[in-house]
Length: 81
Image 1 (cartoon, rainbow, N blue to C red):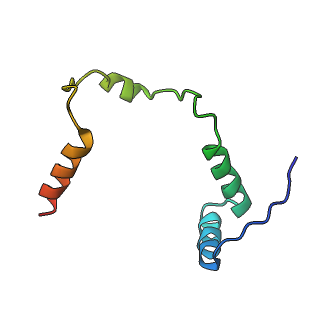
Image 2 (tube, helix red, strand yellow):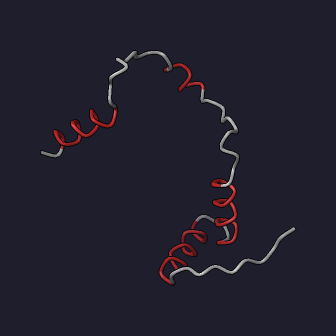
Image 3 (cartoon, rainbow, N blue to C red):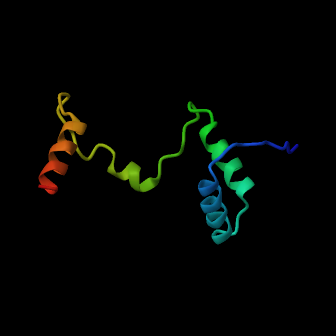
């Protein structure tokens, strides 16, 4: 069953979204519906892991104290000095 929905969205956003939909051969309603489906999926539902990712699992072992965000920040600061 399809139900009509009214949304309040900035004109510029609607314009660019319509252009995007047209370029990709989709309807704006279809894009919104697919987006809402994506964000409302059951978060406990497990997604299959791609075989390439599975192959990489366990390749690196890190110290429990390793702080990914801190290391990323350091790396980005160094890169953009």
